[in-house]
Image (cartoon, rainbow, N blue to C red):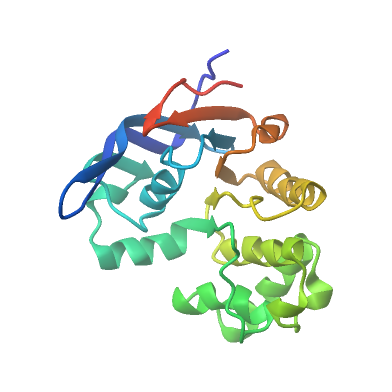
Length: 233
């Protein structure tokens, strides 16, 4: 059944992304149309090389389109300058990566506070209080003053989720967030995502793992840079 999407918070219209080399160019996305409703948990499924990471990078403003339009929470991301995209991203989207990308010399709580500091959000005291609340939300507040290297892979991904939520963005983007985790730990992380959606967050997750289908509201199949379905429940 094709999902009826109301109040889209993410909209892509005819998005094309080309990477040009010296001898040739590669088209990673080919005229992609996609709408994600506020409060949805959506998985983009596809094999390696299908264009999933490119899609996440474009929606988050990490990269920019060759052509086409992207709007997130009413902002025309494709039209923002590089500086404005960085500032917008700090306020509006949280990104969770497969390999955590935590700063190893900072403690757990310092990693979570860092985006708030970059975005000039909250006082130092409020940053600490908010970081602790987020760590409690993902179940690792007891480890706030440890270094990431002392934590398991699943715990590090929970830290990364807390960091992505630091500035209270409405949208969370996740690129293969369970790809380096065992199945039991992956289920724990997906449980955290499910709880975040229950509290109003919108989550778009790129993955090659079809087991994700039991967790999400909708799946989108991406193959060779093209969406092969309209997004099914």
